[in-house]
Image 1: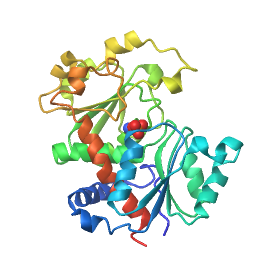
Image 2: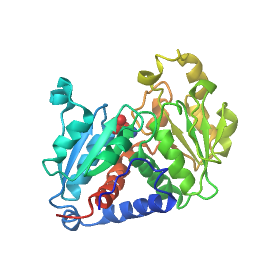
Image 3: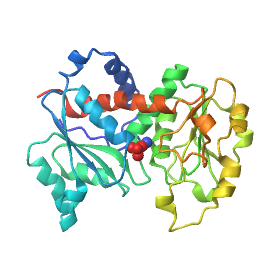
Length: 301
Ligand code: CP
């Protein structure tokens, strides 16, 4: 059976929690046992936007399950000669591959491919809409920290309008019972939020009430055409400085999906400090991507 993962909103809370639970099992499994799970399977990476964390951790996850990765070089491909994305994917599939991990700059591009292809499609981030495996790894990070999220309050701060991470995090966190607040100036708010998620414009009054804060970079590559954001004003109002971190209760943690723009949304001392879970998030990405690949590929061949 072909199993696509295009966003978390369409799979439901039960499945989200099942992937997180399976990620914990897979990360603790002996390597020799794990490598049999997807042995003989072939996964194609098709990244039409830059990536460090997602691309490398999907590759490591596939290898740890015994699958092979074919890293499609978009710049050296016939996409440059005008071949469509659909024809490109159909061409690759004709060679007998099993799954496609795709990052694309346009919202819904993975959904459109998933409707028209034979193999599994896994969304590694589309436009400003969804980044489902980032939502899962952020949820795993929080659950590892707090046990469960009932009664926990999490702020997602910064350019939530253009952040596909925000789109998936708020679905993942609310699925596990957390209260989620999006903090941004009015021009950086987003529309597609589930019921119960609230907006705040001011960060400082919220800080003493938080269990975790997720900082986001300003996505200049997506906003320059539509608005000129005053970076100095943004920094003054939202940057997670040491002084702001001191206002968050002592058990509260700091997260960031990366890449960070140090000195803008977060300072070095906070990013590298003892309350930062930023590199823990990266490590957990491999575990959740193993869980998703196992589910999507459906075992060894
Ligand atoms: N968090 C994230 O998606 O990072 P990359 O763009 O480096 O994959």
